[in-house]
Amino acid sequence: MSESAKTTPGLRELRMRRTRRDLCHRARQLTIERGLAGFTVDELCADVGISRRTFFNYFAGKEAAVVGHDADGIDEEALAAFVRGDDDAPTLLDALAELAIATVAAWEEGHEAIDPHALVEREPRLLPHLIGAGRQLEARVVAAIEEREGLQPGDPVARTAAVVMGALVGSAGHRFFDDPGSRREDFAALLRESVAATRAACAPASATPASATPATAPPASARL
Image (cartoon, one colour):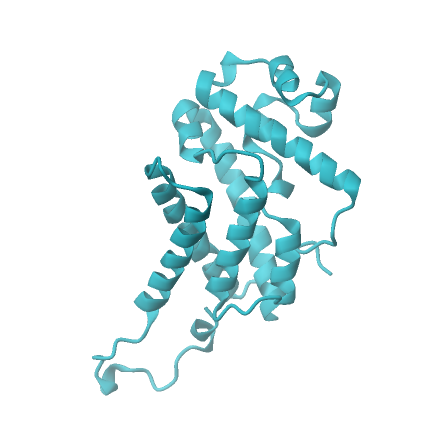
């Protein structure tokens, strides 16, 4: 199995993942409330219930804790299931949507949802770091798509699907956070709705004249 889809983690790894996510979540809360300069590593550690020494086993500093660890950008179990094709998704985009939904659900277990745009508004200097983390995540998703679909590295289908899904997740996130009354399950509904709308927008127009329709459609397009 490739690095894009690892085996089920053990108890120690699960505990470390939980601590890492607790640190990241609390660091983001404090950053939105006070700004990066408004709290110390010691305060963050006290809130999470770990020592300062333990903190530095996870992150180099407060800024790194806010950005988060690249291993937490996607749920590993859901990613492995995606690569294996353990789903009945009608299209690749539908399967990617379910991967995103599973990842958000795993991240938010015991945590309230935090709008990443609120972080950037409070601390604009975080933007390039968050963009970098997003690119790393996209690269992992592209590799997983290539493995799932049996594509050659660099096949445009994989990157296109990853970029489209990233945009749909961002759009669903905007709509989710714009509504103060949104519940956790609403994100899943919004994302699935966006995927359905994308499929409809990409469907061949029934009114297209036969002369304007290519004799053979690009095989890559059918896989999305």
